Amino acid sequence: MTRAWVPPVLLLLCGSSVATGKALGGNPAGAAVLLLLFALLAAAVSPLVFPRSTGAAEARRRAGADGRPVVYWRPGCVYCLRLRVRLGARARRAHWVDIWRDPEGAAAVREATGGDETVPTVVVAGRAHVNPDPARVRAWLAPGDPVAT
Image 1 (cartoon, rainbow, N blue to C red):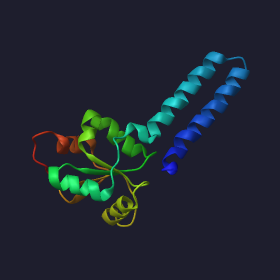
Image 2: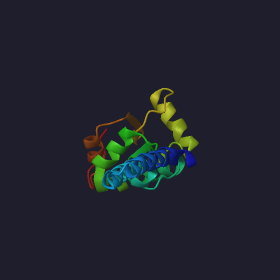
Image 3: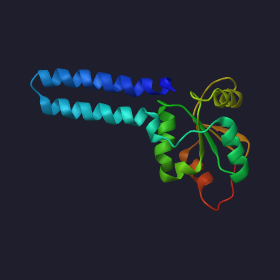
Image 4: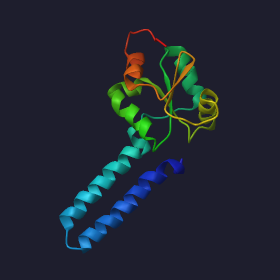
């Protein structure tokens, strides 16, 4: 769990250091802007922007019951963030598995990708899709629509 927070904490520390230098250099407004930018970037790469993760076994069980996709992701992944942002509110309909918190989820991704931990990996109806187009995932999450592969 702590591994997921390393990138955002480092961004906050770097931002604080740069902002302190700006403030001591006589530019408090520039320091505030830089600190805000680093804080926003830290929030974007943190686990906070993703729906709550479940374990891989629980996600597969739920997906079997409701037919929704399972999204394997990890914090700090820009492609996972892109998918999350492009899905908008629909993202909460998918079952999210953080592969850094769930070794079984990481193993499922390695199995689907031939040994790599390439994320996002989306599993729909038993078929894995590595870094799929967000529009396709949105279609899989559309209410009332049958799941298409």
